[in-house]
Amino acid sequence: MEPAILIITLLCGMLVSRIGLPPLIGYLAAGFVLFTFGIEDHSLPLLQQLADLGVTLLLFSIGLKLDLKSLFKAEVWATSSLHLVGSILFFLPILKLLGMIGIEQLDGYSLNQLLLIAFALSFSSTVFAVKVIEDNGDMKSLYGRVAIGILIMQDIFAVVFLTISKGDMPSVWALGLLLLPFTRPFIYKIFDRVGHSEMLVLFGLVMALVVGAWLFETVGLKPDLGALIIGILLAGHAKASELAKSIYYFKELFLVAFFLTIGLNGLPTWSDIGLASILVVLIPVKVAMFIYLLTRFKLRSRTSLLASFNLGNYSEFGLIVASVAAYKGWLPSSWLIIIAVALSISFLFAAPLNANVGRIYQRFHRNLMKLEKHPLHPEDRQIKIGNPRFLIFGMGRIGSGAYDELRNRFDGEILGIEHKQELVDYHRSQGRNVVLGDAGDTDFWEKLERAPNLELVLLAIPNHVGNLFAVEQLKKLNYEGKISAIVQYTEDADALIAAGVDSAYNLYQAAGAGFVDHVVNKLLTPEQDPSAEKQEVKLHQQKATPPA
Image 1 (cartoon, rainbow, N blue to C red):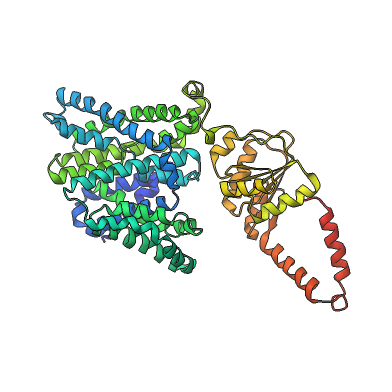
Image 2 (spheres, rainbow, N blue to C red; image 1 turned 90 degrees about the horizontal axis):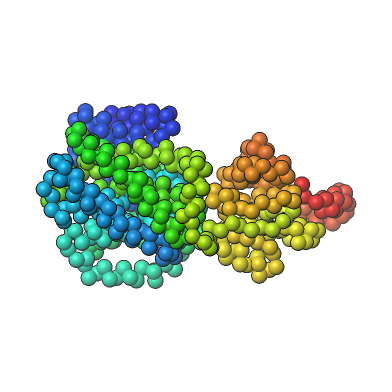
């Protein structure tokens, strides 16, 4: 690969980052710059292969984090379906009108050609939206889950089109893929034994690229669909999140190649840029349509706005649809460049809009709230927590242990918050007061009811970033009580103290001290350990003192 490709891509990415835009816009710009230097997409087959790998791993990683049941929720499948139909019905007369007034790229087009273009423009970018949601740490938020569910439904529509456009029916062996769910126990056993190092990464690549992409392509189906389905198959495993993190940088690096290939398709003419700009001006209608549909399914206006802004762009799958149509001779190849430019410009505007969506909501929230339908969606209502004195985030072993210790002294004044529904149900069956909520979800903090008598927040989240985020949100809510947190490393404790935590509890140090206490108490007699009496007095004093 030419050294200039790496250098120019890096420089463009850094330049764009310095002005507060996502680096991916710089990668798109780098593609156009490289094209002006005579480097074209077809001259770099390796780059195209890396780009394909990036999209495949993206869909695989989405599958790893996807709750399949979410696709069957009305706000996902109905919104995506209605929006697809509505977008086509909106774009079709606009494209016809543009052709009638003399736009040469649309002059004399048949209804079928206009339908193809409208279909390509109806999609939103999976790559862009997932990257923005990931960077914001909102993958588990309601708006993030709804947006990703809609994107996956759109991807399924695109895959169906691409499969039909091949003109070939899938092989009869494709029916054998229906047996994949029955192989889950065997695959999970392998998953259990691959460990946590490079073997985990290799396992992920084999599952995504061989069992997923290659196997599906062999039987005549879209390889990306295979990667998505295999990801969903693995999503229920305890190490699915760890696997997603292990392939994260592979995915990110390969997606750089994807954005480069868009720009390497060719330089647009001024008329192409003009038509692409007109198409970008129409994006607010797509956004408004999403907001209206999502509020019809009883989501809050804020949730609807956040999801819609992430979907307010054109898509790489639209580009793929245009590419297939151009290859088949259904559309002129110039449309590939027009959609690529529209895609690039839409990213350019979508990035700052998503960064400022909170301010936009604050300015227009009164009008947006008029669109809401009550009662609101069960997952989007205010989280009522009563009036506890003690709040525990994370009801795993440590959180539940802390809850029980506090309950012995302050029964009826404690509330646990846990993001896994099965744990919430378990704790409630054990008589603990626990509600469903995710401290890493910005929506959670927006919906959280205030507790005026709250004195102490215990952060039992086994994730340093999650703890920091929770502290930041508590400060935004003007919480003035005490905050304690568990940490794994000394530097984490220092960062939390600097962020405003009153006390940090080091798990490893405490585990070591507890282990020694256990050995001394179980294996040594008082005669062998002269300090036993002092340790017993000290331990008694610690137990008698409420946690700070």
